[in-house]
Length: 297
Image (tube, rainbow, N blue to C red; front, side, top):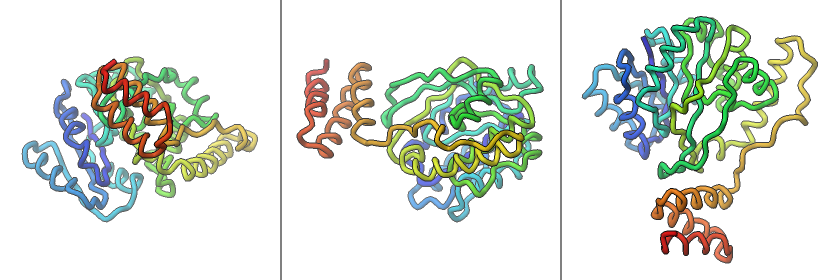
């Protein structure tokens, strides 16, 4: 019923937790097609070890081509009615597939189904639960306004036939490829999100949201201009694009560190505090975070 499509490049640090969350699904009629996109660490070895233990896992290895090309290649091999996207630094809820399949079966007009998510830091500490829009109209309006995160890519389930009908990911976009796909899928069917968070979405400073923010903005503008033209709308005004996510490592770690202290995860908080002290040795906030993490309050 489901083909899980994954592209990974040097993902060994979090791979086991992500794969284990897929293999622990209450809904078990799925295959996993994971593309190792030219990793230089031990990602491929770990994946092959998983494949040796579970016949549902198919591992492909090729030189680095980017997410769109890798997922398109995986989709050509997929046999599932539904394509479930996943990244190997995130963690799926055990009931993710069960609940998404039930909704998709009951709503044949929906071509893409996401869910709300729980944001976690590199150590797995929860620090935010975004309130994603749920209905097609709300999601599409946010996409047209430039909010590419209206559907979270690794939480998405997509009808296989609809994915093929729009010709999959546009391989021109090595980032923001999901934003482009959702806009095109919205023109082919309806989009929705489940209210329940079904994915822990891991944030780390190596993720594309932080490392490639400038390129993402440039691609977003081009994607929106194309979408507006397809829909016969007035040209997109790039000055209305929402501000990019925070990319300052100090501010990001500060948020993570205080969330870890509130959660009682003092070791993670100390890690964030030490990193910020190294970055800005005279920053009072960083020393205060370290003090609170050591005193455990």
